[in-house]
Structures are given as structure tokens and as C-alpha cells.
Length: 273
Image (cartoon, rainbow, N blue to C red; front, side, top):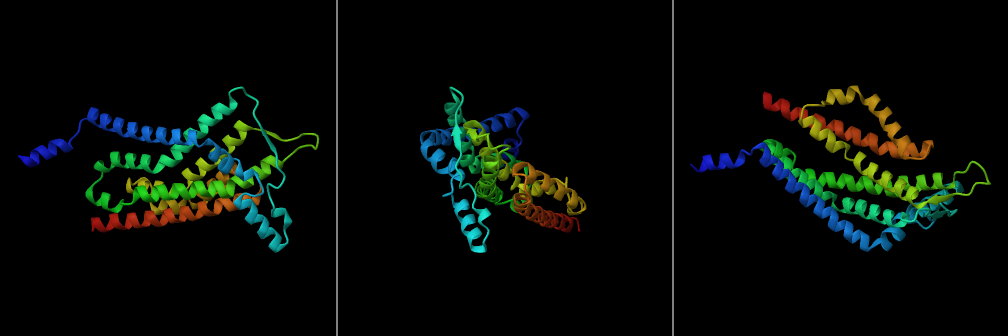
């Protein structure tokens, strides 16, 4: 009798699944909203100490790169030492940017919780052995996302800001960067980096679903490297140094993904024996 009740509780209808998903989404959006409000309140710190910092020579990456350049005798490594002016040309420009930055900040801070809610919704559909092998998914996904965000912020953003902010077609044209353009560039680079660093997690789930195998990943390794270089060219300034700097960790993540797929494939084969 008890077993029957338990089995009935476990079997949910389509509408019950939708209701369950709705509450996961509500909790996720609530967390994002709360952190967005906090970010909205502390906008001075976010704008002055985080978003506008990469364009100054005192920024950590700019300072360390300049010190390294002086050590090896390459003064051209001192980047962002020529300040440029950021302007606002729309009546509601600063307010709308404030709202956008708050929302993105809320998402970034709440990402571990949002992924945890997403994982709680998917976990009941997994088998017991799949739950065992996928333990730590929330931690590693959040960790990779954080590493990607930090990589984008400390490596890609300063290089992009330096190249795009100092590039000019004529000495008669002065760079006065629009606030919306500057913020959009930084946020898109940071978010893209965080998502790209989820590559091993994506390969893990695709391997568990049987969509990709180690053989497929090895077969299309060269094609993947071309895609990686293309992505690096899109999210970085058009210079070889920046593209190599960005593509290297992506290549390493792809190789890690192949090893993850190998382990999953080996475990699946051992069960069939």
C-alpha cells in the first residue's frame, strides 16, 4: 500500500510538471530580482570600481601587464594609459543603463542558485546511477561560469577597451565613447566568456544523452578549433595576441570535455558487459 502511494506521488502529469517548473522559474526570477535591487542600490561601486575600472591604467591587468612589459623592455604592453571620455547622449540613457547593469549583475550573482533550481527540476528524471555520477554539477557549473566571467573581465575586457578605445581612422576624429556602447561591450564579453567556459558541462550532458561520443569529438577536433578561433576573433580585438590568449583556454576546455566524454563512454560500456 505504501509503495503504491509512493509510486503515485512520483508519477506526475504533464500539467504537474509545468506547475513544478513554474515554481522553479518563480524562485529563480525572485533571486535575480533581489540581487538586481541590491546592485541597483550599490551602483556607485559597480560603475566606478568594476565597469569603468578597465579603461584606466590603474586597473590590475593594465598595471601588471605594464610592469611585465617594462621588465622585458616592451613598453607597448602598457595599455589603457591614454584615457578616453565616456558620454551620454540620451535623456534616459544613464537611467536605462543603470537598470540594465543591475539586471545583469543580479543574474551573475544569482547564477549558482538559478542553476541549482534548474538542476532540482531535472534531477528527478535521472536514474540513481546518473544522479551519482552527476553529483557536483551545480558546483562545477558555477565554478566554470565564475572562472569564465573573471577571465573575460580581467583578460579580454582590458584588451578590447584598449584597442577599440584608442583606435582612430584620423587624428581629426576624437573618441568620445557612448555610455551604452561601452557598457554593452563589457557585459557582452563577460557573459559570453562565462557561457563559453561551460563547455565541459555541456559536453558532459550531451555525452550522457548519447548525442556526442569521444570519437565524434576527436573526429571534429580541427573543425572545433576553427570555431574556437572564430569565437575568439568575435569577442576580442582583431589582433593575433588577443585571439591566441582567448583561444588557448577554450582549446584546453575542449580537451577536458573529450576526457569527460571518454569516462562516460567507458562507464556505459562497462554496464553493458
